[in-house]
Image (cartoon, rainbow, N blue to C red; front, top):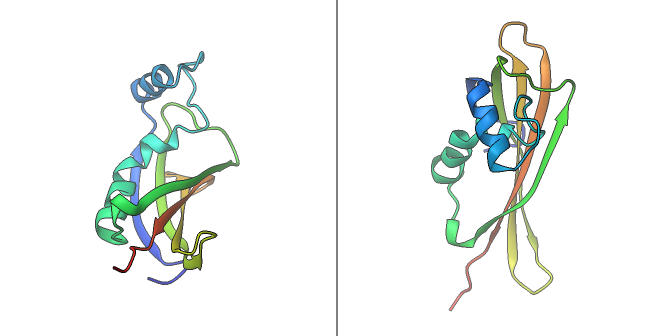
Length: 134
C-alpha cells in the first residue's frame, strides 16, 4: 500500500443512543453531546478490518501508539457522515532498545454525507515491534 492510498470508505450515523452510551462509559457529564473522542465508536469496525485484513499486523506485537482528533465543527447527534480512511504512513525505524518498529499512521476524514463538507479527522498510530530472530 502507498501513502495517501484510500483504504476504505463508509457511511455512519451519529446516533443519540450511541452518544449517550459512550458518555456513560467515559463518565462524561454531557450525554447529549458527542465527546471529542466519540469517533472511536464510529470507526471501530474499520479499525478491526484494518488490523486483520487491510494491513495485517501481529496483534501480539502491536500496541496503540497515539490518537488525535481535529475538528472544523463539533459532531452532533443526527449527523450522517461519510468516512474515508487513508494510509498516511507505514514506516520502519530502529527502536532505542535495538529492535525495529513498524509505525502505521491512518487518517480518517469525516465529512457530512449530504454536502461533502469536512467535519474533521481522526488520526491513529499503531506500533508493531519486529519479532526476535532466534
